[in-house]
Length: 351
Image 1 (cartoon, helix red, strand yellow):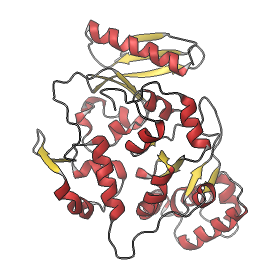
Image 2 (cartoon, one colour):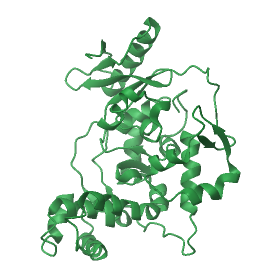
Image 3 (cartoon, one colour):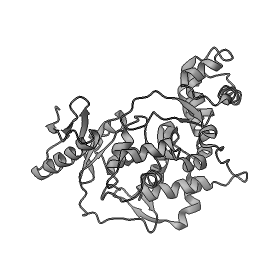
Image 4 (spheres, one colour):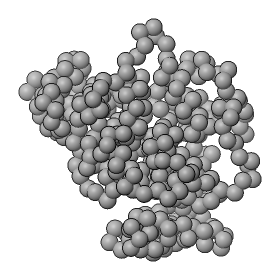
């Protein structure tokens, strides 16, 4: 959706993208503005308050904004990964804690239907497990052993709000779909197809980097006959859906402003396809970036007091590219300020 803004509802865009990374609550609005024609922030706010999209930990154990139906269908497939990633940080602190018992204790606390912050939830079970400390207990509860969502007003347009967590079953009115008893992996196969629909052609390593799931080779094998394959410049196999769009390499790509942690960058193991190795660190530090001809060429930020978008170039720019960046930056400033500003500054990198 970056070559040409799409004329589709916000919910369809969120689903097509397999969710938008959203630990920074305002970033998905820019991600959708850059991809949708005439996007209105109120549309996404309505989806959140109507419980049609939710904020939850999923891919890579990061907070994503996802269609509610995808969370219900996909979460069980991510459960083991989510637990292991929390343990990867707090294994020593959580040693000796029975995670099933911890989950049961958390559900008991939340049985009253009241949302809680991570700290509140951790304190409620700390008497039973005093040794780990609040942070390890809290992170395992909200991101590992319980299926939880972050409730509005967090994530609403131009709104600052703390995190309040509730069980998916309470917020959406039903439990997540269980994994098949026969050991098959229909969710894994769906994830492969959905990833390729948004981000293909891509290697199996890219699917793993996006999802955080290591156990997808069998899913790839199961759908391989549905796919077409190519070789990249290094000889790696790239897979794609047969009817997916694959524009010619000479197709001009317009300037696009991406939010922090956009999956157009983080959703690949080989990020050199969109960002030079010299600037790869920007993709993990939360820098907002500007695409010029489909590649990261600048970073951007906005001054909350003046509503001025500042673009910092990462290298030499032609006059035409600089003009195009400034024009798109003015449109972004107007979007973020609700029409109050069209101010943009384009500056060279201090390095």
